[in-house]
Image 1 (tube, rainbow, N blue to C red):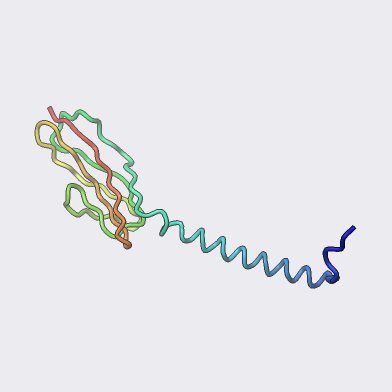
Image 2 (tube, one colour; image 1 turned 120 degrees about the horizontal axis):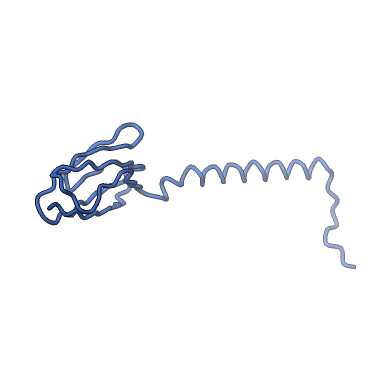
Length: 120
């Protein structure tokens, strides 16, 4: 039977290397976990979506945006609170309307959400 290791390690040496590997692995895992927002880019979630067909002229668009520096509805800038929540009123003309919600992060990545509405 071949001998793979000629050197004997003490228990202290093995524990030392195990602790070093665990700490380095933990730091790397934590760094990847914190970088998830950088990797993910802008996130837009509509919390209350109005129905496709609308009898009313004005509808409320409610949602949440994360990892952004700017957000707009149909090229009109809107603002969020500290938690990223937003509420905006959109006035619909008669007929077919496309609402475009666009968010940008600090690295120039853009996320767009489009919804169509018909006002009778």
